[in-house]
Image (cartoon, rainbow, N blue to C red; front, top):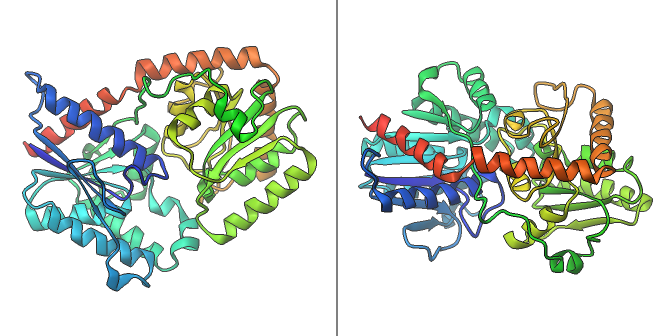
Length: 403
């Protein structure tokens, strides 16, 4: 069986959890293909088709935006890449698409080549209305692509039970039997505590002071403005470390810049790294954080929480989406309650900010408890979130739809 994974992101051009997912899924599926154990579905080849610049990795093909669409709406450029992908997958046995950026390629490949189409839902476009700020009318095109692909797919993989509920509520035409839950994974050999301090010293992070670390895009769903407001209430000795860049829109970029400036006017220990750091640098920063914070208002699972836990770091995160399936409240971190509007924003934003600040303060001022939670978090991810298990469950879904 040959499988083609269709994705916008793939290393080295990765900016979110979906790209991380495809990177490790491809690697783990290939490992299963090499093992070919008796009783497991037969997988012979895994190819990856992604957006962007040419890749050197064998079996990976990248597609640039069509030159004739260089000035078009981003959604139209996306569809142009999708059409090229459809032609490229000829000869495959199954296509597996990730995010709306590649869903239409999977759907059209199903129609043109007569092969099964599996989709993994990393997020749902109708639940991210702020994307209209970025795409304009292209947001309606994105929603159409996702709905069309999901409703016709042979199987839909949800990365959490919360995401499965969202899929069935958003797209009631989908047969619930076609929606399966396969949690994201984490490589605990790669993501593990790093005792070094060279990266911290280079970036101006004090390894001996308590710190709260945020990692993520500057996007509405990541909740960074709420964190910046909450950070104003943290004890003065707590460092605020932001690994945040790639703003979705000029508007959200301007809002975050203003809030960071206001925070820096109150405290001197705010470190903002806007460049995308190499993975080893991120691992060292996570390893030394007292608390990792995920203030997202929309998060189907949140691989970054797994990454922090694998580095033995306590997590404070919003109790939304699939996050409660990852973070064990009171054991591996603290969950911050939130009552949400339809678009995910807090019904009571001031209360959410205050609760977030209280949870961060609780752990940042109790490093012994935070360390114990971090240790429990690493044990949890090692036991329940391995990429090998993700690949095995995914491979079984492939076998089921090919029967």
